[in-house]
Length: 288
Image 1 (spheres, rainbow, N blue to C red):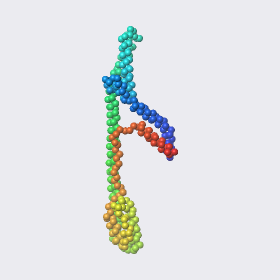
Image 2: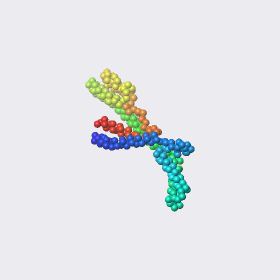
Image 3: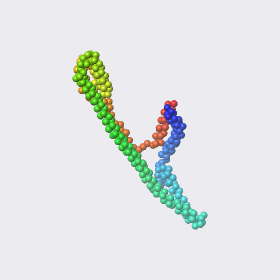
Image 4: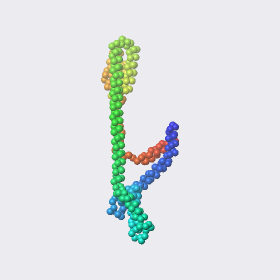
């Protein structure tokens, strides 16, 4: 009770802020999906696709940054070529500014040219990692199911042996009655006590059997035993039923439920967390 109250208190105190952050992130994700991919090179179809189609904000900033740097270099060259005098001797400031930008421009050109391939590589690497994780989990699940099947088989065999031992012990008890203690059950009172004991034992034993229609151990047994007037008749009826009985336990091997993960991508963590939070908040409000 105290732990549940503490959990509800923590959820009520931190929940709204978390939900607000998650809703803000969902809004940003929707805005991103609405804007990108963005075709910014409609007027220049001759450019490569990595220069015409911006995939995300980083891609867009890189393209505009490179274009701005190229324009800046062109302006510096024009200033050096057509102005009579520069702000620095021999136009060193303009030349240094243009030369410093060139190495970065080369890297940016190279990065933008392979941007699509880089995204595909990252996506493929992430999918490979997910598939590897799923295969590892499925392998562990298969090993656990194999161990569970062996344990279930061992328990079932042990149960069969236990019930067979009980049945054989009761049959030996009946045989000993007929051979060594028949004179004790000549009186009707003793025979009635033995009859009640056998009915009780068979009733307890039948509780571990399957459907009574397939194993009719107790059907009509009481009436049949009441008609027995001697020890031999009583023992023969009970022994006959036990000999025809095929012992079956309630421990049926049910089809094992498969816990193997499907080979699919993992759902978005933020979406799952928002759904989990909404369900938890609804449950806490209902309990209150």
